[in-house]
Image (cartoon, rainbow, N blue to C red):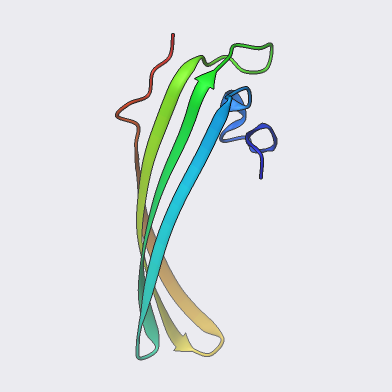
Length: 92
């Protein structure tokens, strides 16, 4: 998906560089599973346009931990926790 089509990242659609690095792992335990996800997203050299209010560079690190348990084959219970940090976000 391009940044311009996503409501989450449409403010960065004019970036000259868009990099996304993802890693995920899941481990099955009986009828359940636990998973970890890490994502690093970088928008560099963002130019201001009519539809892009941001400029400069923006970097986002996101992490997720999730769990699932099948009570029956038709009933799944799941939960997740997501955290996003933007330590190097720069807007001029």
